[in-house]
Image (cartoon, rainbow, N blue to C red; front, side, top):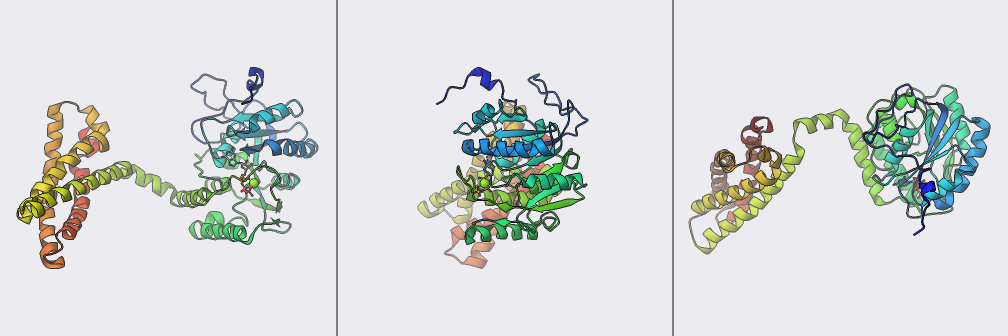
Length: 423
Ligand SMILES: Nc1nc2c(ncn2[C@@H]2O[C@H](COP(=O)(O)OP(=O)(O)OP(=O)(O)O)[C@@H](O)[C@H]2O)c(=O)[nH]1
Ligand SMILES: [Mg+2]
């Protein structure tokens, strides 16, 4: 492992944490809890801040920075910055970038150690940026740097967003296999179906090469998932005018791709999140999803207990079905209470410690479940006698348990475990 001198480490910029939100240039960034000087963009503004997300791009970063600075020194002399956001690459890309700073003072380097992921890396870069325009480019030279000039021109002519596109005139992909072309187009089609008003606004919504006016995305809380940061910008930003500039996606010369199947899953997740937007978060507020999942898992453990006891009493000891079921269900209720109290509603029980409080909770829980038990026995008998016939007691019991689980959850939620009530 290479030893990096402390003087080199000092050149790293602190990485922002907290909400993924871009601030307008006039507003100072909130002070960090560590008391570190914030990366307020108010100090000195620039025309462009270009973020370069990297992971193991040590061989590419030098040539990229050289090509970009040659172009930008002409287009925006002294008026731009390049921000490398490296996720602590094993090949020490961040250190390679730091070494470039001697030649390219407009280069800033962030080494992220607490977070991972392309989209959030881009936003972290924009959070320390001083640019009135914010851009992103891949580090692996697949995005031809020359196209940046066209993107900047489009912004200068009034576009809120200028996107490098493979699907307009002048655009394309160099040597993609048929499979990759199909996957890329397939992903776009899925996007069009799920989120037509966002994905349909540009010809290449999968592009990771674009420049956007800061004010078009300053404000809203960003919440990207995976690779497709452009979706987030289109979905949450205030973007009126969009320009597209064709570019040919080059073959990677050095380093390895980081694309895996995971990115496709993240992409669908991201689309759904944008699609459901406020509705999903409102649902989250109203419906305690995590508790429900835990309640369901505890319920499942209760099913095992219930089944085992029923088997023991009815099949092994030969007791009548109804009596066996009542005992089995009560043992399952006790099991469920213990787990729910210690896990599902642990936060509530912590506030009400002591045996008497616990006993009260148990009695309440039991009362609610008693209603469920009566229902359970009724359903079991109806299903057992009328639907499945004498041989299918366990299947009948499963159906009864499934129905009663819903009933129990609903009742417990409304009556006994309601957080507002017990708090
Ligand atoms: N900071 C950071 N950068 C990443 C991460 N994943 C990928 N990148 C960078 O994001 C850019 C795009 O990633 P690639 O793996 O090249 O993805 P791609 O260009 O869609 O696919 P290929 O054609 O296979 O290269 C590159 O500059 C990567 O180094 C990550 O988790 N964190
Ligand atoms: Mg690439």
